Image 1 (cartoon, helix red, strand yellow):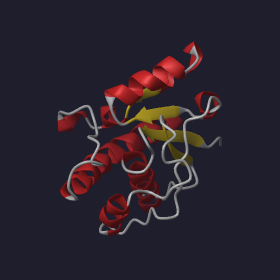
Image 2 (cartoon, one colour):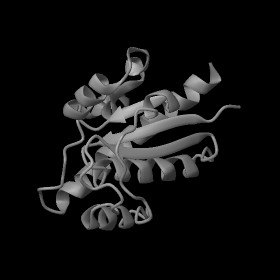
Image 3 (cartoon, helix red, strand yellow):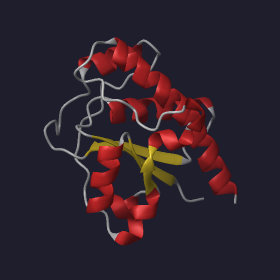
Image 4 (cartoon, helix red, strand yellow):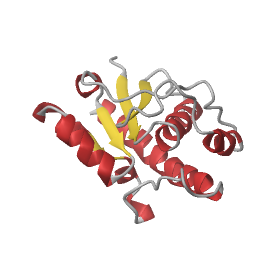
Length: 160
């Protein structure tokens, strides 16, 4: 069976997308599906390449038993559009930037992460970088809801 590949993308790859990578990795492990899906995260910008996730993101994730400290930021690469089955943007700006950079053949695989949690009634994971620490917990709540929907989607897609 071919491993499904998911890339989570935000602006700098130090807050939202590494949090999504960590939460979804935990979601997969809890479902016994960690071998079925390859996960990475990246940013559309290059400001933080090589850096660990924001300390506040790490603390919030660790508060839920998820350690994201070993992750390192990277920028989206041209080959990502070929390598990943699904590229999930955290907000409309990143969605737009990804679709602009992607070849036409890859654009259908780029969508908003919160599309997998329509019950939330919001489409974007807000950037908590300039806010207080509560914003990081709010982001994790959104990510957890979307992760459950994403897992359901992958299981359904893989069984078709």
